[in-house]
Length: 403
Image (tube, rainbow, N blue to C red; front, side):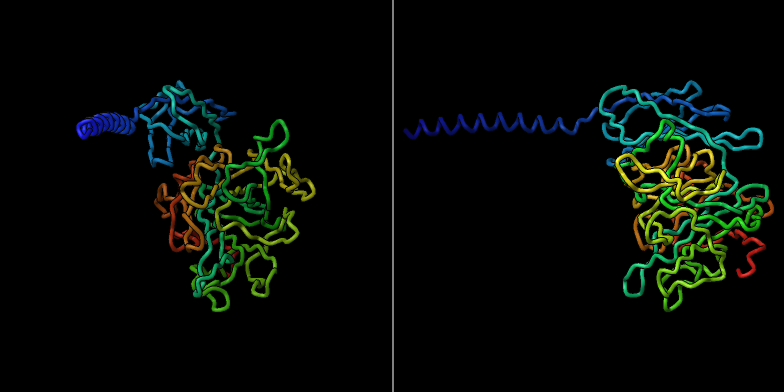
């Protein structure tokens, strides 16, 4: 009987060992992931812009932190090899100078699954001219108080004349777009040409009562509150003194808000019952533009299935755009058309006393700086701590007598 039991035990062990070896063999094959190829095609919608010579193609798998860069020729196709399977954001960009203008070409697709061999992916690519005015530095995330509280009144937006000619900012408008924060649940807009517009939740404008010339190399500061935020009754930990700002978005919602020397912006569109300039510390999407006709707050539009009031802005009127997100993982949650901004910038969190600022492209012999403006904020901007108004020697306009 004992011998029979021993034989049964040996048989069980043999079977177990065989099964176990087979399991280990199967597990070992899990790590063998075959690379894939993908075919990227550019669908060019250039309008009157000249065709680019070549296009830069970038594929990013954010989950795996895997990135591939390649060049697409004038035929508009490229095969990208050795990709690991996964979800990708694909960006196609280029730049061309012709007839005194710089043209930027950009397009992207997000959340593309590349899990099969030779997947065909089409990216719509549009063209735009680099604007004379650019959003140079934006401080949006706020700061911490000495007791660890949150403070957001010190936000500012700097707009710089990046061109060779004088620009008049009279009537210039800055709009925050819907949705307010990065999300995969984008609104659906009615109308056949809905993709030719962006949609604002709020708009503030420089007054149109007089001219506000801005020479090359000069900038204006738009402050939420143009005060010295380092004062003891505000936030001694704030990184900025904004008393020299040209404009502020004055709405006296608390006794701490004073009417400072800065010129008051005009609240052009604000459908909320509680008006105030309060852009999200998680990062909004912004455009600056000159309205082709007066902004009528009653001329609003709502997304399908929503009653939210928004103002429609033609993409053709936009001078510059900047998409901000809460952290690097949200770059793929695009809200803005790629023709305006093919990427996104972020400081990576909230209340960090950090800003995003444009990178220097070149310095002219007279010391004037030209900044990158490729309509791709992922490439054009970098994080700065602390924020600094008129960084790198940008000048204030002569009509700012209180600077």
